[in-house]
Length: 224
Image (cartoon, rainbow, N blue to C red; front, side, top):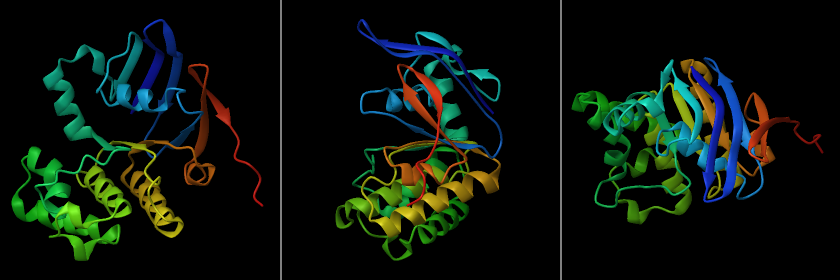
């Protein structure tokens, strides 16, 4: 479903990613950990087609995303990719439910179906009662859960999550992590979780450390 080979990206004369490789099949969910500035968010932006590699290939269902024009990459993201941004990117003039429905609006899904699916996801993240609220009335943790619901509502084949529990209390974080993992595995999708938290990383199938521009297998610390 996802194949990355020989991926390279520099900023100025500084290499960030060097000959990076990764393959994910249906139902696979991995965590990418690493120091700040290691290139974790850069990797997600490249996989989503928000940035373009200088070297190597990123293929989603066999399609080299760098070979697509901007409109085609946008269509691919809308249909195949769910992205949970570290910055929520919630639209302030829309209600919570309307924010969650937005990917379905862009995909041309009928109003009744998109409303039902949006409310189903909001219930799963514990925000059913806030569906009609404006975003300004929500806390940072609640906005993060809205962003998660929006990322999953169109049932993407590839889920990319950039520090999705950074603004959440421990109990809510565990609920969000479980929802991400369960959704990816049940749908036969694949996912990449970028996180500083080894507790969050433990919700995935395997952990990779991004170091010196490449991915290396990493072990979870022993349970205390």
